[in-house]
Length: 137
Ligand SMILES: [Zn+2]
Ligand SMILES: [Zn+2]
Image 1 (cartoon, rainbow, N blue to C red):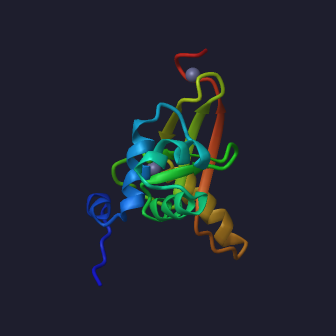
Image 2: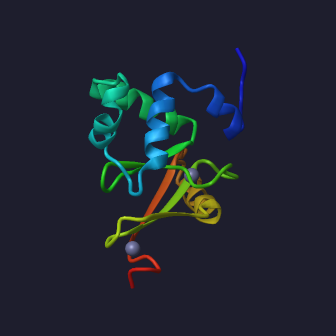
C-alpha cells in the first residue's frame, strides 16, 4: 500500500464519487450542504445521502475540502498544500457567503500549546470567523 502525503498525489487516489463531489464543490460559488451536492451529482449516479457523506468524509481526511461547522456546509480547500493541516481558519461573509481560507498556522500552534498544557491531545483545530468580506463592508 502506497502512502501519499501531498495534495497532488492524493487527488489521483480519489474514488469516483470523491472526484464527482470535489468537482461539483469546486464549481460552486458558495459553500454547499450535503443535500445541495446530492442534487448536483444526482445525474452522475450518486443517489443516496450516505454516498455523499462518505465521499465528503474521504475528501476531508485528505484535506481537500473543509466543513463549516456553524452552517454544516462544505467548501474546497483554498490552500494547495497545508503547512499545518490540523488548523483550519475560515473567514465567512454573512452577506455574500464567500469564504476565505486564512493562514491557520500561528493560531493552530497556539491552540495546540494551550491544549497540551491541559493534557489534551488535539487532532483538529477549526476556527470560523463571521463577518463581512472586503466587498460587503
Ligand atoms: Zn484548507
Ligand atoms: Zn461578502
